Length: 432
Image (cartoon, rainbow, N blue to C red; front, top):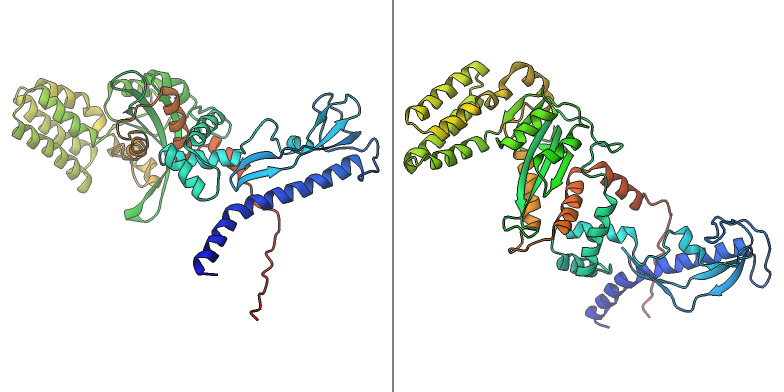
């Protein structure tokens, strides 16, 4: 025997032994169940109680053996393909014949376990369906591109609480709410559909230069206007601050849902919007780039020197005057409209309230990272999704990334802590 042969044998065992062990254990438990419910073989006992009910009449006692099925039942599980020889029992009350093991394991009419569905769906949110099926197959799980696609659709239907803030256990409050959206290639429209997201920032942990944000998913809509998210956000308590990118529809939504909540304009989006406004005003490109850089330097100076709210507004007004004096009306209108929201983060009462978070949010960087991961998965080589398929994928990915209560409840039910004790006995081989 060569080492390659020994290694090939070990790899084959890795793929086959787990599923075979599960099948052997389940069949042994099935035999014990039948003996308990129907009595010993060839010595039937009447009126014995059972831990299951007849699917025909509902009685929970007095069953008789009806033999085993000739064709093994195939189950696709996270450990591999499990084939079980099912045993049937018959109800003496109504004559219904069924397999009690399927009732106890909740596998009636199913060929795939929920654990495998979650495993394939998690892989499919990080890579293509074909690649997800190939990776699952490498670890012994029955996976294909079609199964990964079906797993995403089936799991998304179970996460019906994602996007519903009134779900029991869902976050009802967040100190900072960030609203933003992104476009994705889906449907028949050339520009695709809009994916609008509301993220709640609740805490920050980690060292100073490697801070990690703890977020909650508060709202999600796909292919709908921002006003459609109002129902989801009204179930959330008013936050200390709302961060927007400057889009008029987002600002109106925040003002309608939380009229008294202060709004902060994103410091990254504002210089970017100024650039496009100067382009609309047909400003010379070198001068426009210099003005955009000047606005960025102004914002950095305000943060670096820790200026007060009044001092920051004085610098901002002086900068707006330079734009107005050059007769660039679109840019001046943009900066004037954003004046009341640019330095909301500098208000003393707001800085004191958000001190546990490390200070107020200056931009929408937290939600930008979330949308960047969504785009990295969905924007693949010009692939165009169906609206329903994109909604399923985005729902699962956001639920995973934010540890949504619906996702946490589902995974805890499908991945319980192991309570079965087992021991592997190592055999000693003596070389003669």
